[in-house]
Length: 167
Image (tube, rainbow, N blue to C red):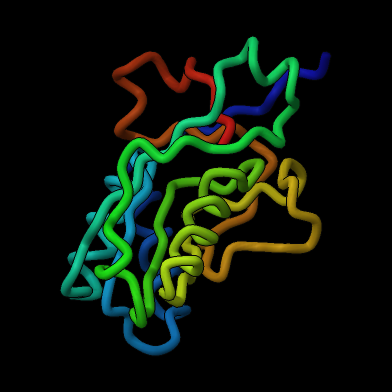
């Protein structure tokens, strides 16, 4: 099994990624939906920089590893927390997470916002085109592409990314 390359970022690196994202945004967003946990810090930084008036959170869980072995990566998500439809209906929503790996989590959130009548746009710091499960589909906005396992500065004190990242 090949060794996965890891890349540890500094806060300065994150600031640069935010600066790359900001000029990409087209039009104004009325709502931001931050995916927990990975999107909390990038979402907060973007919310502050863009003055998006409504900031909401979504928490999504996929089956445990044993269940995934039986069903594969195409298991249905469980929404632990999600904004009410009336907060999304008719709104341009910026959906923020840290990374698009397989793309399952952010795509599940995007689809649920669309089903509620919102207009979702996806945004991540890093996009991994080599892991995505969605073919040529990409985030609407992303700061960098990578094939590495990214360790963000807010993760370093917790063991440098020893958790499994399926999102």
